[in-house]
Amino acid sequence: MDKELQNRISSACKKLFGKDVSAQVFRPDEQFGDFSTNCALKLAGELGSNPREIAGQIAEELSADENFKDVSVAGPGFINITLQDSVLFTSSMTAHKLEKTLASRSIVTEYSDPNPFKVLHAGHLYTSVVGDSISNILESAGAKVHRVNYGGDVGLHVAKTMWAILEKLGGEKPGGLDGIKKDGRADWLAECYVSGNDAYEDNPQAKEEMAVLNKKIYKLVEKKDKDSPLGKIYWTTRSWSYEYFDDFYARIGISFEKYYPESTVAELGLSTVKENTPGIYSESDGAIVYEGEKEGLHTRVFVTREGLPTYEAKEVGLILQKQKDYAFDKSVVITANEISQYMQVVLKSIEKFAPELVEKTAHLTHGLVKLPGAQKMSSRKGNVLKAVDIIDLAEESSKKINPSTTPDIVLGAIKYSFLKSGLGGDVIFDAKESVSIEGNSGPYLQYALVRAKSILQKAGKASESSADELNGEERSLARKISIYPEVFATALEELSPHHICTYLYELAQVFNRFYEKNRVIGDARSDIRIRLVGAYAQVLGSGLDILGITTPEKM
RNA sequence: GCACCCGUAGUUCAGCUGGAUAGAACGUCGGCUUGCGGAGCCGGAGGUCACAGGUUCGAAUCCUGUCGGGUGUACCA
Image (tube, rainbow, N blue to C red; front, side, top):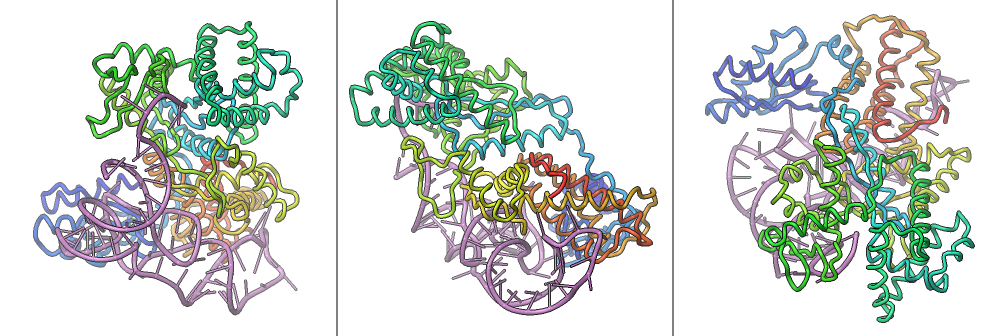
C-alpha cells in the first residue's frame, strides 16, 4: 500500500509542479494519520517557495481520492493522510499474506559454524537462532533457502585435541575409545581440547608434535584413511562431534541442509589460490599471502609455509563450492565480529577473479553473548559459557515462575531475547528477564497468541460483513495489523529479525488496549471484532513463525 | 600506531537511507479489578541522545575532531 501511495503522490507533484520529486512516504505517529509525506518540503527547497503553500495544493489534489478520509497539512509542511476505515479494515484482513518478492531465487545462508572436537558455546546458540530467523525471513519472501553449516574438521585445533586424545589413549590405540560412554563423549572431547591447548602453550615439545600431527591429519582426511589406527580414532571422534551437533540442533528446533566440513573445501581453496599465484596472491616469506595493505586492508596468509591452507584459503574454497552446489543468487554468511576484517580480505581477493560472487555475498556479524555482570571468557581455557548453560539457566528461571514450563516456552524465551535487539553489539542474556511473562518477552507473545486463539475458538465463525466505520480501538488495531507487510519488507531488506520483534510486541499492546474496552463475543459489532481478532492472530502467528518460536496449545 | 564496530532514562534496548513533543520494557510511585484467558489496562517521576564544531528550513540520525569502550592487526579459526 505504501508503494501505491508513493506513486500517487509523485504523480500529483508532477502534475502540479512539473517536477519529479523523490516523495518520501512514512508512517507518522498515529495522532497525525496513517501516512505522511515530506514531498512539499523537498519541493519547496527546489522551487524556493513556501512549503506550506505547496503542501496545501498537493493536499487538495490528493483529497479527491475516495480511499482517503482526510488529507491535511501540518507542522512545517507535512501532508498527513488518513485512510477510510473500510480501506484500513480490508487491508488488515490480508496483512499476513506476505509478498513473494524473492520467488524462485536461490539463497544460501551459512551460520552456527561450530568446530568439530570443540564444545558448542553460547555464541553458537545465538548465531543459530539469528541465522534460522533470517533464513525464515528469506523463505517467507519466497526464496529457496539452503541452510548450511561450516566447521573446522581439520586444522590446528584438531591437532591439539588429537594430541591430547593420543595422550589419554596411551598412543594410537583406537580400542580405548570404547570405554567412553555416549553421553559423555562431547565433554570428553572438550576436555581434550583444553588440555591439548594448555600443552601447546606450555610445552615446546608438544607444540612440535602437534605440528606434525596436524599434517598427518590433513593427509589422512585427504586420503579418506579410515583404517589406520590414527584414522580410526579421528573418524570415530569426529562422528561423535557431529552427532552431538545434530542432537543439539534438534533440541532447539533448527536444522541444516548440509555441513561443509573444512576438509571438503580445503583442496579447492588451496588450488584456486595457487592458480592465482603470482598474480592475485603473492609469495612472501615462504607463505602465500594477499597483500591487502595496498588496499587499506590487512595482508593475510592464505597458505602457510608448510603448504597448508589457512582459514582464508578454505573460505575461498567454500564460496566457490557453494556456488557449484547451489548456483546461488545471494549468499548470506553470519559470523562473529572478529571475523569481519578477515572476510574483507578474502572477499577482496575473490573480487579479482570472480567479482559476481562477491557482489552476491552479504557478511553479517554479531557480538558476544554475556551474562549480566560476567567477565570475559575464553574457549581455550575451558571456562566458556556453553550453549546448554543458557538453556539450563532459562529453564531454571522459567520453572520458578511456572512449574509446568515446557521446552516451547524456554526456547521461545531464549530465541526472543536473542532476536529482539539488532545484530552487531554484544548481547547480555538475562535469564530472568527472558522468561518473564510480563514485558517484552517471548512468553508474553506466546501467551498473546494462545489467548487470541482461545477467543476465536469460543467466538465461532464471523460473517463476512465489511466495516464502514471503526471505533478508536478497532481502528488502531486494524491500522497496526495492516502495517505488518511494511515491517516485514524492512526486516527482509536489512536482514534484521529485530524489526519483527519490536512490531509484534507493539501489536500485542495495541490488541490488549482494544480488548480491554471492546467486548468481542456477544456484542452488536462482534462480526467485525472477531475478524479483527482473527487477523491479529494470523499476523502474530506469522511473525512468531519467522522468529522460529513455536507456541504451545495452552499456557 | 593503523583499520573496523560501538557510546540514547537507574538497567536492557528501539529509533539512525535527516523530519513533528526522542519511545518501549524492567525497576520505581499511584490508580482500575468477581475479567470474552487480568500473563491485562490507565497515569506519574526519570534524558545535556558521550563531548565540541560543521552542513541544513530542520540533526540522536549526515560530516570533521576529541574522549571513552570493544575487536582485529602474517602463517589459529
